[in-house]
Length: 94
Image (cartoon, rainbow, N blue to C red; front, side):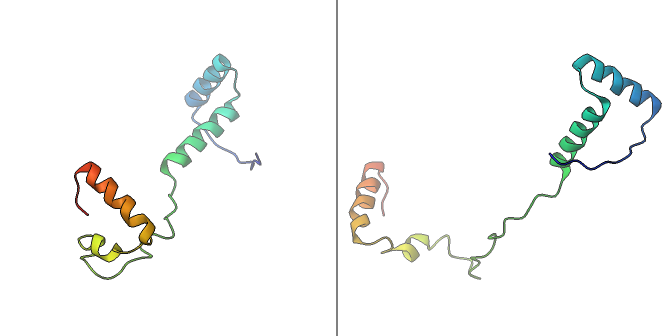
């Protein structure tokens, strides 16, 4: 892990408590601060947007309702009997 040096000013009481915790769990105050900052950054950091989100926007509002019709014939003939068997076993209609 590459690190970047920085200076942090802490309240005297907070620093004393940090040192006491560090002694108990055998970690330096610096290690505790790094861990706290890392956790805070993970929790509050900006999440990356999925780049493909919205890439397939058709501009139509009825695609979900027409999905079966739109996908009809996709996957070739060899898949059609398999899908029909699966649907009949579940009681669904294709």
